[in-house]
Length: 215
Length: 215
DNA sequence: CGGGTGTTTGAATAATGTCAAACCGAGTGG
DNA sequence: CCACTCGGTTTGACATTATTCAAACACCCG
View: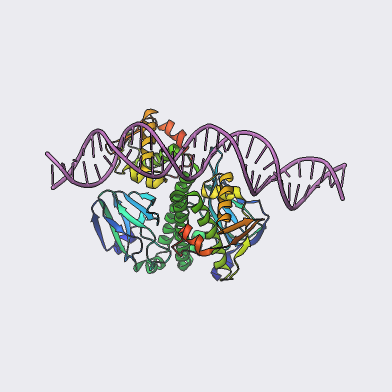
C-alpha cells in the first residue's frame, strides 16, 4: 500500500453536505476515504433516493467498470471528510506495474459485492424493524471494528432519520415509529445524533447478524 | 482471455435444480458460466430467501474476498448449466503473471457491484409492480444483448413466480397478482414458462430503465 | 426573536402479507 | 388409459405493515 503513496495527487478536505461526485460526472480521480462518513446513492425518477452504501474510512470511492464512463451514482459527504486523491489515468498502468496491487483491488471490490449483497438481503428480506436494527448494528460493528474493540456502546451518528429511511427503503415517518419501538424494547436509543446500544445480543438476534463480514 | 484457457481444469455440466455451491462451503474452483441460468441466493433465519442475482452466460462465479473463506451465498442451477472450471489456488499466481487479467477481473467485479446496486435500488426504491417490471425487463434486455439484437420479443423463462418473489422481495401470491395486472395492462405476458414483451416502451417507462448498464 | 431543518404524533388510506382453497398440467404407477 | 400426486398457479377474504397527509414540536443558527 505504500506503493500507492507515491501516486497520490494530494489529500483533500470536504465539508459535510458537499458532494465528492455526482451521477453523470466523469471523474479524473479515485478516492481513498481517510475519515468521515460518505453516502453513495441514486435518485429514481420518482424522486425517491436509494442509499446504496454508507462508506466509512478505508473505503475506495470512484471506481467504475470503465474508468472513462460517467458515474452511475452520487457520493455525498455526511460529515466533514478527508480523502486521498489518486489520478484515474494512472491506474491501468499502475496495476500493470504492481500486480499485487491488482490482487488487493480485486479483494476490495469483492468485499464491496459482499457488503452490497448484505444490504440487499436486508432490504429485500426483512421486516421494517429488523431492517433498521440490522442497519444500525452494521454501522455500529464496523465503527467499533475500526477503533479496535473500544468497548464503548455509544457513538456519534450523523445520519438523519430520513437518510436511514433512504438506506433501508422506508418512509422517514415510519423510521421514526420503528425507532420508538426499538427504544421501548430497550434495544437501541437514537437521539441527539447519538446512537446508544442497550442490548447488543437482543439486537443481534433481531437483526440476525450471522456473517462476520465486518470490515 | 485465451490465457485463461490454459488454466482451466475442465468443463462441467450440471442439471437443473442442482447446486454449483452452497453457502458455507470452501470451494476449490472458480467458474465461468458458459450457458444456462444460475441463481445466487442467501437464506435468512426466518426461512425467507433472497435471490441476490440471476446470472446468465459469461458470469464469473465463486469469487470471494478471501479465496479460502467459505462462501456466503449459494448458487443454484435454474436450468441445465455448463461451466468452465478454474482451480482456485492458481489465481493469485495467475494474476501476478498476467496483470492485464487482473485489470479485466477488476472491471468485471465492479460491473458486479453496479448490477447489484441496480438490484438494490429496484428492491428498495420501487413499488411492487415497478419492481417486477424492472426485473423482467432487465433479464429480457440482458438476454437479447447476448443474442445480439435478435428482435424476438418472446423468450423461455425458467423462473417460477416464487423465484421472482424471492428476487424482488415480494410474496409469490403478490407476484401473481402483479403479473395479472401487467397482463391486463398489456405490458408483458408470462405464462407456460414463456415471457412475452408486449409493450417494450411502456415497460421501460414503468420500470424507468435509464442506465444502459446492460452487459 | 424568527426561520429552517429534523423529529414526533395522529388518523385515514394504500400496499403487501397471510391463510386457505381450488385449479391446472406434467409425470407416474397401476 | 386412468387415477393420482406434485409442484406451481390462481383467486378470495382478511390481517398486518407501511405510506400519506397534516399538524405540532424541538432545536440550532443567524
